[in-house]
Length: 48
Image 1 (spheres, rainbow, N blue to C red):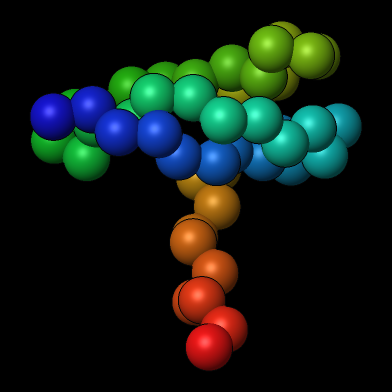
Image 2 (cartoon, one colour):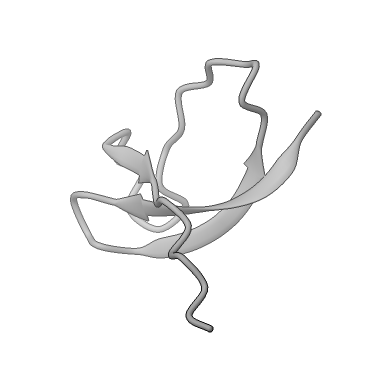
């Protein structure tokens, strides 16, 4: 089941949100520069 996740391009540092399916391996490319050096950002722990 797909969910929303944040991604960051390691080449141009562009951050964006896209759908993410943990059961699927997909190669992503940055929508800004086209690089395939994109990593999913871990969710920050909520501060309470």
